[in-house]
Image 1 (cartoon, rainbow, N blue to C red):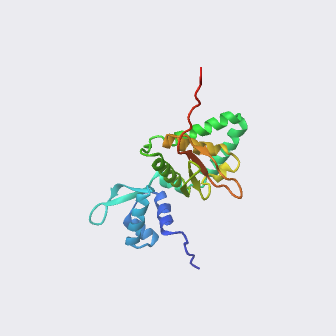
Image 2 (cartoon, one colour):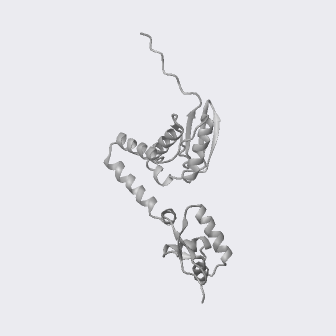
Image 3 (tube, rainbow, N blue to C red):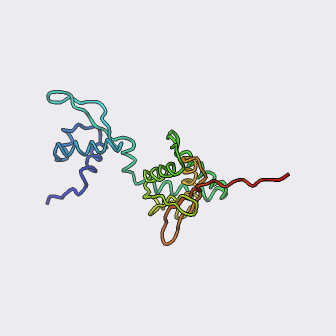
Length: 213
């Protein structure tokens, strides 16, 4: 009895490229997918940074471009990152004092911006770009305005596996946002009935009190 491969063509192409570089012809032959569908999927995967053209292979009439999976593509297929990093946080939280653990997580958040250009322009625009950045990390956010503040609110939490037990993970995102928009950011996440991210930015920074000599 013939079994049906229920994986999407996108998934099947990635799995094949994990075995080694392949040309379009080889992908078509190995997977039984039309040439047009293969080219369409490769274009989408390349746009997402999951595959790339690297080198050529001898063809029937002329060399053909070969495709390889990228490190980003490999990472997108891994199911080991979340449990490993979650367990790492469990170990760190048990070994470090709370204040030091929080400082470490804030440093993690700031370091996530390494090599990334910071936005410019009005604060509201920078906050919108911070919301877009969070969506790249798996959030589903929008920006609200109220009570003299801008709020980045998410419909869930892309880090729920860690934030459920370690609120310090929220500190990492708070520091990431603060570094990104160059303004103080305050966590206001909701934990009931389910985890939902929330980060607030004051429209007008508070003034330091005047000290009279």
